[in-house]
Image: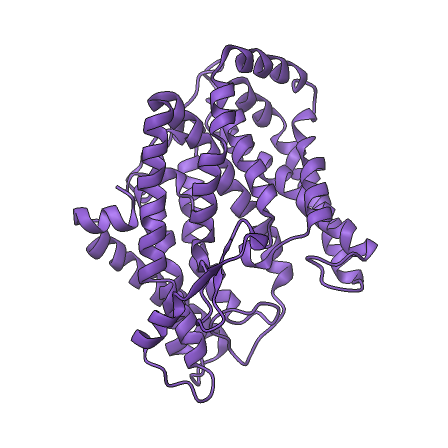
Length: 402
């Protein structure tokens, strides 16, 4: 995730701290996915027989994490399009996203699915045989935006964790008309009017209403981090719009505190709806309690993102500088992590699943198993990136789009 760092290095640094927070979010995927091994509510590839309901702990993280990454990618897309023009923008998107998407799908995605089947009774199929059957696929446009589906005689083809990279590529191309309009004279005039209108206190939070309606009406998809593909597209486009006029950064900076309060309030409503329960699936059910809960959850996503990026903008503003801004963080960690986020994302989940497959079922306490999965997966992913990806041109091209 956070692939925008790999797409446009340094561009989103125009928004203070965004490179750092993206790296933190992507790095946090390992402990998050390791926790799914022990979550009673999630069908992860490897499951412990000692589980608990971790939804109350996961929801406050999930509500902002993926939307943040899509919004950051939209910011990067605007700066890349403006600096390079439409043709070079498209070529760079294809190289930086399509190549890692294809390489990761072919080389990495089948492994977790094979391990899930191997954990079942009577499964002795070799990985080579499974791999060939995994890519027996069919087109089903009814499943858009994921039309590739497993064939009847296949082995459960899926995009796996690379759904995020796929949607980033799709959105990067879909917003081309928006980018062109934002860069036009008419778009510039509309942006100035929009920035004027948004100057009212709290107006920048109004998109939460639309996102709440999307979550309530269309539902949420567990397979894409309890989000909605249309909602994610909105965050991507919103990132491009926010980046196109510097006044928006000041507006989200000003309203960051209010956004945080509203986000916590909405999450409390969503949590209350979950506790009250309802008739059906909380992600898709039509029970009024569930619909209200989803609406609050979807709206909380926008407010939480505004709180985070606005808070980062506040930290990037010098208290003694009369509006002068501190330079974006350029420490050793950020310089190392910024180009690593895409390959880290592509590599991490097969590693987590493999380590969990080896660890789960041991006589260790579940807490110790969890810590072992986290530390082992982080170490292996870091070594794989640093030794196998970062140091050679071919592997950088395959997994980092470089």
